[in-house]
Amino acid sequence: MWEYKEYEAILAGLHDISPEDMSAFGAKLKMLRMAGVPKIATAGKGKRLQYAHYDLWETHLALAFVEIGLPPVKITSFMEEARRIKLFKTVKNSSYEMHMVIYTYLNAGKAADHSDVVFRCDVMHIDSLIDTLKNSKDSQFKLVINLSQLTRETEV
Image 1 (cartoon, one colour):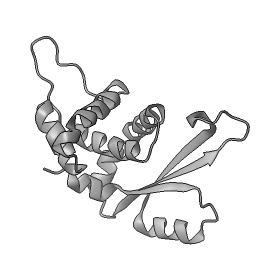
Image 2 (cartoon, rainbow, N blue to C red; image 1 turned 135 degrees about the vertical axis):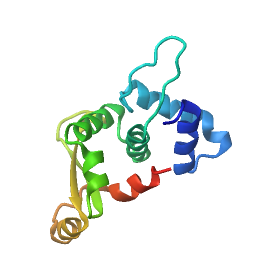
Image 3 (cartoon, rainbow, N blue to C red; image 1 turned 180 degrees about the horizontal axis):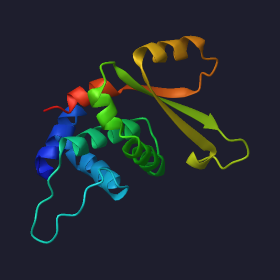
């Protein structure tokens, strides 16, 4: 378990944040916190929040989403689904390298903001990922995240 400053420092190290960029990084973490990532109860008056490994993992994944430009509402949606399907536990206990593929599709006739983009996410092991990428006629995927590597990175 970590207090906020330790949690922030670990994440800053994982994302190569320089000391001069810590203020902006703190703002990103605050934006994620306001969006419900990590999903952690308030500590109450006079008590400090304690962040667990799962909170660190969830925020590390959400920051990867921020880096590719996903809007907070989509990040929240992805993280709620990740919690529902117990993604962290699945990846942590898997003997395979698990990957997440994020696809984007444009909806015709919508505004030129994020509301015209539909995001879909699939989680799969490496063999399925290779087959999917080889056989896919859909070149709209935006990112492949190695969830197993991301999980190992948070084991500090």
